[in-house]
Length: 339
Image (spheres, rainbow, N blue to C red):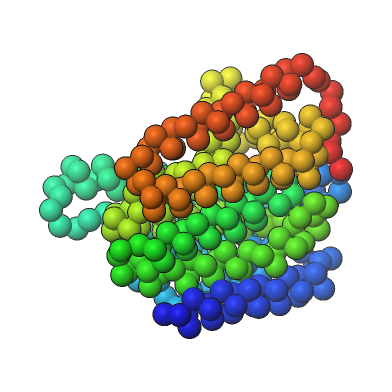
């Protein structure tokens, strides 16, 4: 086990670094994020960092397979999401096609997660629907948040490090033996952060962000169902992303906007446009990510019974930050895009 904790992250880091090097050599041939209604950049940036991330993670996770979730449960839907997302990065895929694949992938994983014994059919179907919806939403919200330098990569590194620590310190042996794979994903993210930090020269792209959100939800739910950690834990770890994406979507629905159209109304986008730029936005959100993830890890170890109260308190803090951004946003108009 000790060897796995060392080898898996090192293998993932090394392979991911090689992947980043190869992508930089082939930069001219990569799909690019062209400035548009959603972008915060003034110049095209390659959307391919996800390929390096998976080059690092997949060999490590297959060599040190996490027993928390069978390969059959997560790998086929993961591959489906990566393929359709990579194609979308390069050629654009219709909304209906993308969402259909997202839904099918979520249902596949949820089918393995729903308990097979001691639950009647109506309850099983309800659990299946709820878990599938959660996984599908996580896949999309991660993609929504990959819009400014360093944001998605930092959340991935912090979030899966927190998962790894929680798994390693769990009383459940299956979770403990899954820790190397979780740390491997966090380690695979680090070489990408070197080219995604402000001023970024590469994004994750859909091929990285969508499967990453899928894994965050799938492994998070699997551990909850095994009682390796409580339900509030993954929600608190990824709270800044969950809150921003969910609240933004709710507000867009309330305003009857076309949800499939690009926009810059996420709180992180507005913060950047208010003058914080990519560096300032990353500093604010990284602070929130670090605080909520640390709170989740510490609370689970020393006061797990208070977890829901900590989650509620953290929600209030995050909402106050959003309210501050919204206040200043309403006072200013015509703000140029940060560079």
